[in-house]
Length: 273
Ligand SMILES: Cc1ncc(COP(=O)(O)O)c(C=O)c1O
Image 1 (tube, rainbow, N blue to C red):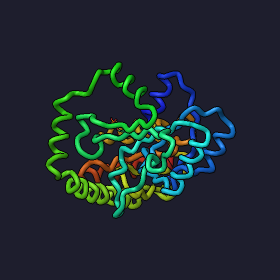
Image 2 (cartoon, rainbow, N blue to C red; image 1 turned 45 degrees about the horizontal axis):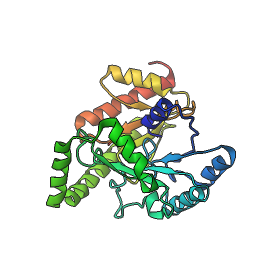
Image 3 (cartoon, rainbow, N blue to C red; image 1 turned 120 degrees about the horizontal axis):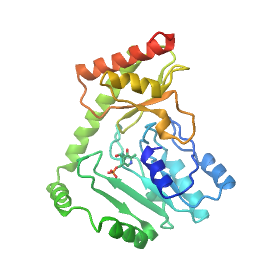
């Protein structure tokens, strides 16, 4: 999951359980049910639409089933839908919140991925936790800066946001596909790369034995930034994965960077770099 969640929970002194997520089908209700049977779970947090880092999309039926499983036990579900508008296909995926009859889903999103990363403006639909959400916000920073909020509100009122999103989705899809292709061209055999249906990250499984943290250090010396899989889990299961960010415009420089990264992986496979 998104590494900030782990830090957030750790800072709160909360113990967390990881539910598996798969790049092709996201989170499966059976895994949630198994965890509910084994642990005393008090709340869940998921990114069902184009999860960071594996890019997965949890299907609508699975979302409905997960909401049902949690509602039956009165367990709150925090939903991070920050990339939901960035679908590559024609339709926007649903949210857990759509299936929420009990008011237990706390839907959160922001404009950080779609409009203005620097503003850090978001929103929350806290369901039955309105009072608690209000108190946390009010006692954290009273309110977000009004100037940036007004700026976003004025932009939305102008009615050009939809057109902007259409162009952004196309751009992200092209950038993601270009990066996928370049990875498959330049990385050694044994590499597997995700095929996300939205968002803007690629989850890459490196050939057996290649350590992603070591790769990160070597890449950094060449001015290439990647996120090693280890930062996205509390378990030591993803040391052979990296997350690539496709959010930058595709260019010869980016293409060369991926090629160079591939060469570093080649070197680590043969043990001579
Ligand atoms: C999955 C995910 N959730 C939440 C955020 C944070 O967004 P914001 O700072 O707008 O809350 C990010 C990235 O910044 C993210 O990748």
